Length: 430
Ligand code: LLP
Image (tube, rainbow, N blue to C red; front, side, top):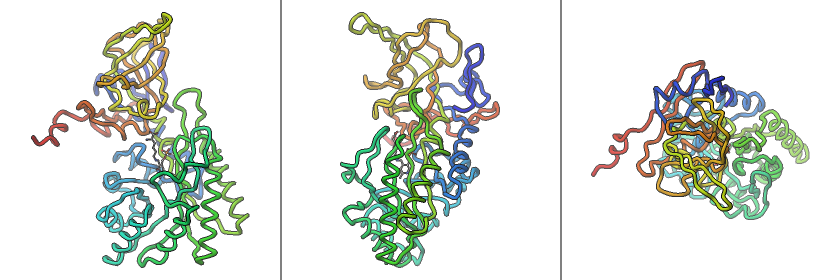
């Protein structure tokens, strides 16, 4: 992460805190969150996208402290569940600056969002439109909404495929006419303030051509609504999904470059359509928190396994695994790893960092050359674990989910504490 460096003695220091000291006090496994780096990434998006609103996607990682930092840095917050909304409100985030997503929001969840004055509910189905309309009719309250549309673009890391896009659960299809129909119904619903269209094309995207195609299609619908319904929707959201570097081969997204590219696309399309630009927003999650966190583990066992042709792979088992980082098993994600607590001159050997769970797919780092002299007790740090690791962590095998420890200016602060066996037993009522 931004403030991480290694000392001459091989000690990894993050946010001015030597990792060995942090471990001595807080144990492992632990997520270490570099507060200055997180804030700098949030600010970089806010500054690059000046004139736009930037919603931090809390699904990547959310806790009370992070929600507070996001507000302090002038960003808005995207939540996608009642639980995330609770954390945001507890942190004191202005409800008007919260966006609420989800393809299956219940009547009580929607009622609460409306009552709290959530700034935008992103509507995802016709049933949800009915639920919202009945809530505003019943209570006399106003619901501010956006319409989640399927732009017909499925983005992948280095490409996008313009087929197979309709076959997923989110949003209203533009091509089938469902999106237009949703806009028409919401426009007529009493107590509903229709803010605009929302498009999110995917995650961990590097190729901006997917955003370009999506923006073009969503703006065309925006113009059609204004032509045919006489309604000029004031806003538009182009979603998140900006990719980050997990290994050195990747190319990190640069907010300034993204802002320039996306701004140009929107400007060009609006000119071509003869419409005014709506007030725009984006929703990055991974690109803000991903690089700002690492996970620290302790090595427990080291085992050399002979492969075909006499090659050897060293299996390094650590005290966590797929319960704190499911991404390697689930998405075939690539991570890297470094020895954190000491220096080693030993020759690097092909290693695989694995967890302590009961299955062979429990891999944290598939391939890494680690020093050949690793012993139990060594500390390993896996960078880039800020996004979708703690937030997707589980209690598989009754693992206790690790704490999140914020580091800044040499001070370590627990922002999410380690789970205890008492936490596990609290829900197991016998
Ligand atoms: N907005 C919406 C509507 C989303 O669904 C998402 C992510 C985002 C914004 C933020 O996307 P980001 O900037 O973080 O890429 N668990 C997967 C990623 C799932 C993304 C879900 N939606 C992973 O670990 O890669």
